[in-house]
Length: 276
Image (cartoon, rainbow, N blue to C red; front, side, top):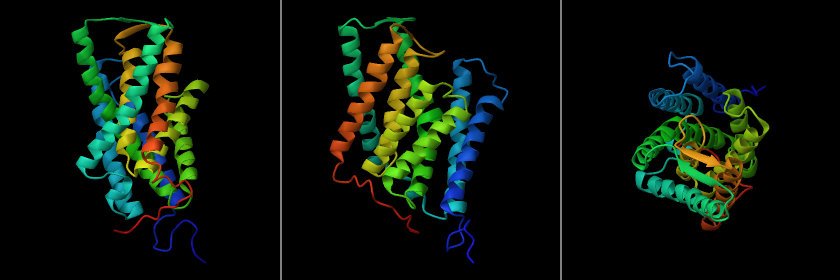
């Protein structure tokens, strides 16, 4: 009788590989935030140290899992050539930034929110440039590589694409809860919807770079307006979050991606993981 924990080629079954990588990812993020001597207080140095440490730990973990557990090529994780990747990255960023700009214009134009700088314009630009790098290293790259790269790749080998998208979004939401980034119902909902959109981007484009771009744009701007490192004071932050940071970018961004790649979308497809 065959062992249900393994595949015919003696690899661990996809479910076990998914659970192992998910558990290790949670432990790595918990270690970065709570298991180092960096402390819980926020400052730019701590943010930078955690960002670099996260990427340094997560990328080798995924490489090892792909080589030792999957025994499949690295390219299967959705990392095309740099030229293709940069184009997808820019597209993903545009899918968030353009609708967000419309949302900001509506919020300011109708007087729903007021926005003021806490510091000089020059300092705000320096903070924004630094945040782009830190968000890329701390969140966008490692999270997309784990959830839309590794986990969704393994899920879609055994279930249709739409189920794989839902499955990785559920794991992404659970991850947010376990590491303390989604401790309330509204944050859990944001994680789940965000995960669905990013998973859809992976299905639409076939790579994770568009999702990295969308993730990078969203988190960078959100952290400029909210959190310990924010550089803007906002009156009416709830409306800003719903309209300009979430509602319009999430809906219009996905609509644009779906329209641009509608010929590639196949929600019922399974995607075997080729040996080469």
